[in-house]
Image 1 (tube, each protein chain N blue to C red):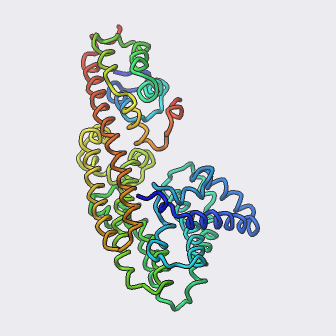
Image 2 (tube, chains in turn orange, brown):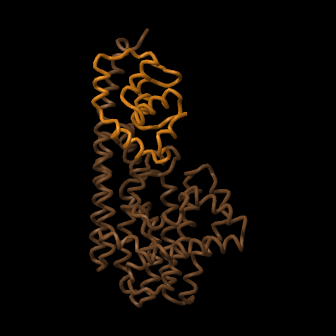
Image 3 (spheres, rainbow over the protein chains, first blue to last red):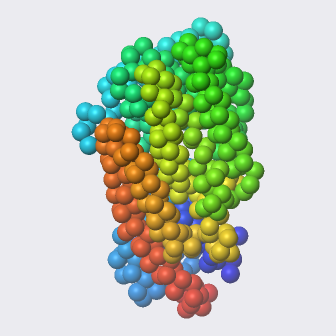
Length: 87
Length: 317
């Protein structure tokens, strides 16, 4: 499956999980994953045509987003701040 | 660790004094070179570059001589600090150009490398005549580091054995100011023990760089032990790092840290031991805090995989 020229889901996963950014959509997802909130991720998913999974938002809400953000930043020294990730 | 012992006040003062002195000398002798160097240094070390030499998480290059030779005179300490600042900038300039870490700014600045190297070597020439045994150490350490840097770069992603033989030896030239200090106080017999510590600490220090910088190295095509370990297994490095790589790297870091601490404990240098305890404790605390994020990223990945596994159900038509 393709989404705006990006292979889904592997590239999408990679972008969200690793903090690598070179695409506007991925950048928005990354911003949501690293700097905003679980609602941010769900919102971007919805904007790009993914209906909300019944348990998705609840599951996202249970994640520790500050811990996820800390990992994304620690292992991406070239992008020390979330703002730097935005295309 | 007693906060009064690191950084040492006289070392901080010497760094500040000689940073200003080196800068003013450069502006007087080579204004274009000095201006370009100023810009580059601020870019790579921040707005207060001199502070980078004495922070806890930087390599303690300017502290090693005074730790090895507490009786060092202020005059000799000043010369070693001046040399070490220049030597660090020289190595950083060449490494950055070599590793393609930046947008090529260092390539434009390469002529400044000869100036920095001269400033690195001149203080030693003030201390030791040409036939002094210090120069044997200087030559062998500097050559070993250059050989290791080139071998590391040309051989691709290393395994652990090759990492220990090449990459980890890139910092072994740190023994040069230590040797100068030990000769200055008449204790060159202590050099082999300090050499073992410098090698062991170099392993830990370089692995820490590789561990936290593997994605950056992947993007730039630089050799990296963590990336090499993932690719040898034929797996996606990102997934491997979350599932196994983080703990694999943390365990190896722990082993190298223990080896460095063992060598440090044999040096009769309480300040070094105290520094290491503080540095390694901060490092372990950082890893512990990241473990939580790693487990959360694994949960996120599984959640997204669940989502992706049912695209017909989840994506609007």
